[in-house]
Amino acid sequence: MTNNKTKPDISEFTYIKAVPVGSVNPNSLLTDEGREKQVELLNKCLTDYPKGVIIGKDIAIGRYAMGEHELTLQRTIYHVGFVRKPSWIKD
Picture 1 (spheres, rainbow, N blue to C red):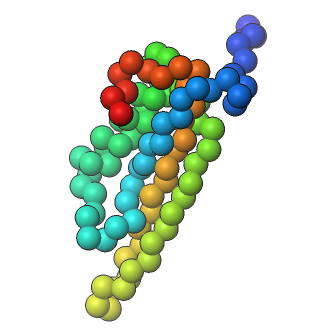
Picture 2 (picture 1 turned 180 degrees about the horizontal axis):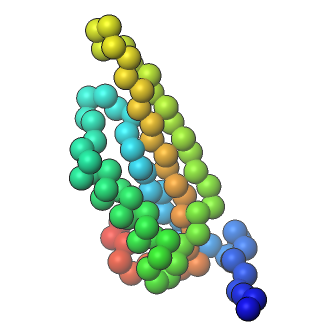
């Protein structure tokens, strides 16, 4: 069984949503619940109607010294393109 659907061309996207996952700020560390909410939003963007497509991502890494310990944090911002703005996104 073949799938004849093709992904939209990047020029067809009229709305792009930046969805961050993670944090690089050691002063406001994310809880597990906070990270889960970020991942839930990303999954909603990729599965709900209208379905979005990841068209790019930015990765930021922060390294911090805390006493004799070193803390490494990562944040990935996914750029999700939509052919039209979903009604469930309230910006």
